[in-house]
Amino acid sequence: MQTVVSILANAGGVGKTTLAVHIAYEMSRRNFSVALFDLDPQRSLDVFCGLSAAEPSNTTTHVFAKSFQGSYPLIACWSNPKIEVCQGHPTLTEVANDLVIRKRGEYVLADRLKLHRLKHDLVILDCPATLGMLNVNALAASTHVLVPVQLEMKSIAGAAELVEWCINTSEELQLEPRPPILGFVPSMYDERRAIHKTYLQQLPVIAEELQIKVYPKVRDSSEFKNASANGLPLQKYRPAHQAAKDFQEIADDLSTLIKQKNKK
Ligand SMILES: Nc1ncnc2c1ncn2[C@@H]1O[C@H](COP(=O)(O)OP(=O)(O)OP(=O)(O)O)[C@@H](O)[C@H]1O
Ligand SMILES: [Mg+2]
Image (cartoon, rainbow, N blue to C red):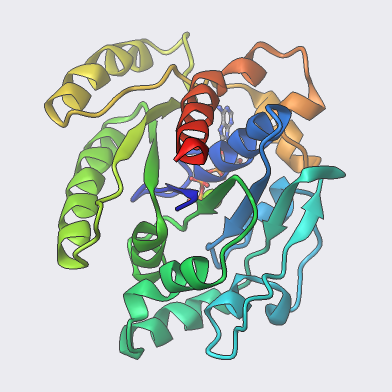
């Protein structure tokens, strides 16, 4: 089975899409091919990838359609042949509602990726903030989960709840194997804020109880906003920027996982 990573959090604006695009780019630099799916009706990936809005038939909505025959509407991104994007669309909200009453509604995406296997080394699923049917589908389709955690009380508590949600949902869906959480990724770390320092020290304690790894922090920088406003990842927008290196350990782990899978 290919490596499929869901970027999940049960809070908005914690850095899910930022993590998704920067990992995608980092992996492409290591010569892995990546398919990046936008499961968010807000279609944030369009902005982050500098893409104009697509018709529903050219988006993730189509992948969930009953008529889907295996032709994923993937389009090239950042003139990088290693990265392709399946764009999001507001109609994903209706898709989510429909999945509730559909047979195997929780497993549609997993079934698609299994029956119509993509050639890419890595599939990244950028998920919406609410833990509805789209996120259940993402979890069921995933081999691994990554959880960005903002260094705020609400987000840290939310991350612990998310871990519980992943465990319970995996159990209910009888996922075999259950997709492990690869790690928490502290996001938007601002060293000038004392509370961020405090929470950054506390996070490993909470994570250890949950037996989850904590990745190095992604620092807060307005250049992330400038990069995404220009439809680019930071590594491409400001290659020399220190924060452009903040995703390397995650990419190291994903590279190892993919190489191990390829060996089998
Ligand atoms: N490390 C960072 N430093 C500064 N700004 C950041 C950083 N990471 C993300 N941002 C900005 O914060 C905002 C929210 O980030 P992002 O869209 O990645 O979060 P999200 O969890 O995907 O949000 P949503 O729940 O809306 O999908 C964006 O404007 C983004 O550019
Ligand atoms: Mg997002």
